[in-house]
Image (cartoon, rainbow, N blue to C red; front, side, top):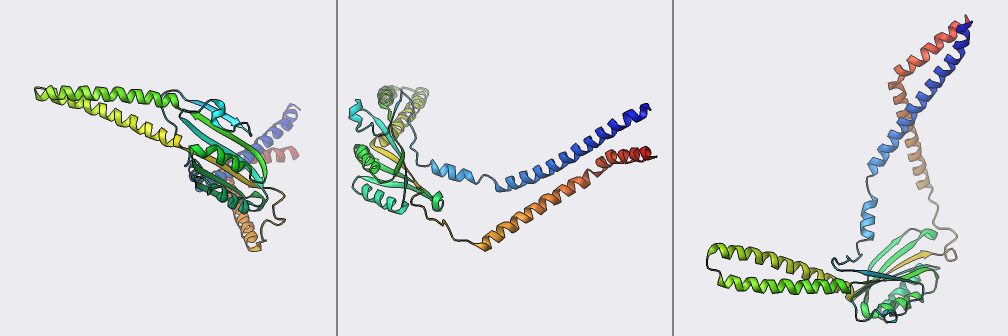
Length: 303
């Protein structure tokens, strides 16, 4: 009687354990298949991410940098905010949805031609309602606000706009002061070099002089980089397709392509089933250890 009491729960627990084990084998097999597919794809999105940010101007180092951001139409000119006669790095961002993207691009070209500006990046992606275009325009700093204002007048649904101004005046001042100090030290080493009496002193002075000259070149490079960034500004425009201007039918129906996609999906499904069967066969001894006692217990129970 006592054996009969424990026989039912034992069968239930053994069956449950076997079921969980089979589910685990299936999950591992499917996970292995998914991992293999992902591994084969690699990191194809990395090039796009790098390309997307390739035009971003590097920021200077040293000193103190202040960043101001103005959204909407609040900013007319930098003068209104007391930023005249300072070293400024300006960037503008405009995002809008339009009915006709190609016509908008022509309008941007027309506006750009009125200024000392040039398009340095254009990325056209997607189709139909999902089409979008990213444009980057480089313009001389003096014409930045005017060009930005004209671009904001483009007809469309304006989603957002902003201007970011980075004040690097203190950075430039600090670098210029350090440059003057290094040049003063360079002059002193040259004077010492003229009065050096032996080879050891001459070599020691040459070593220090070369280090100072390397520091001078490094600072001159940083100043040149900041000068280029403050002389030119960048405007980033993001254009998307509005629902009003989108075509009713985005693209033609391509039954051959659909058939190939379905065939590829069927092949991938067959591979997954095959992988699952292989894992089941490999783990069949473990499954047998669980299933055989269950079968024997059931036979004994019937007797």
